[in-house]
Image 1 (spheres, helix red, strand yellow):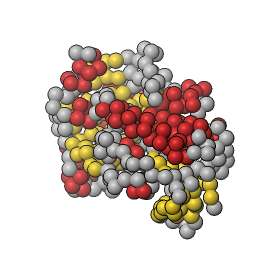
Image 2 (cartoon, rainbow, N blue to C red):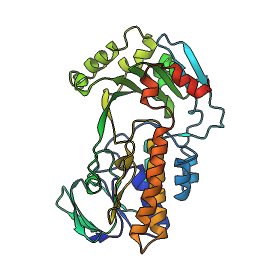
Image 3 (spheres, helix red, strand yellow):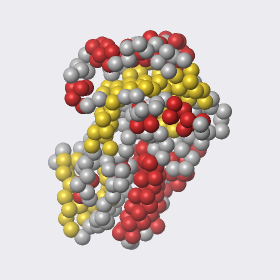
Image 4 (tube, rainbow, N blue to C red):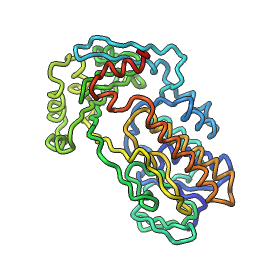
Length: 372
């Protein structure tokens, strides 16, 4: 089977690419390892920025649908100290350029915008090989395969397509997150809900912190952030949620119980997420018939840019392919040159994990927000 554009990965970037191609009349197929859209939770809130994520959705013709997903008031942000003392309070006055939406709802919006059958679920990549003249064969775990003249790796941090282009592999940053949830916070966890406030809350000290978001229906989504070696986390039994939560909270001895309750009262098992990155200047030489987007191309530590960059990557790649339907290499070269520059700039701007958890926190971060 041969398809004109083969996209590996049904994340935000791959789906925006498919949507832009569909709108421009370019056929494509998206192959996704997960068996359905509901296979796993899709993360928390995303701030969709007016200089990259929103223009991407405009190119996809989905601005109206996107606006329906916005959670009003969620751009509010507060920084507390370990005693729960308020250090900074930034309200959401409605003028911010980064409205918040749920990642899962945004993904479903993109899926709903595609013709039935565009996404081929349950197709886990087992191998990719070059056939020559810009053609590639992608093999799947179910024994099937597809041959394509235009292959796009939108398959995230551990991309199976990336080795066709580069030897770079993600490296551990030294930071890890532990994720928990409280549901219906206003009714069931009122003290925690009041602590988090109307949007995002951060409590930061060198090497550790707690970040929480108010999501839809008053749900509270918490990330504990710790600067520790991977081996340190390996000593914690995450198969026992109570034991894991208790061990993590030991690292926050002396912190207000209203803060640690975001972990100890968690209604979902704590999920450990190591943070990996690709080299900041990651790029590759033009290779016929294949490219990457999103985390597959420029995996960086969380700073609010990752999902937005993936959206713009997908939209601009789709535009380039549609603009050069008979010249794949020109399309890919134009896209890659812009993407390389864009990703370096985005990942160098805004607060990163060192700003949040390094020496001088939280005052360094407060000064960044206030211009002090």
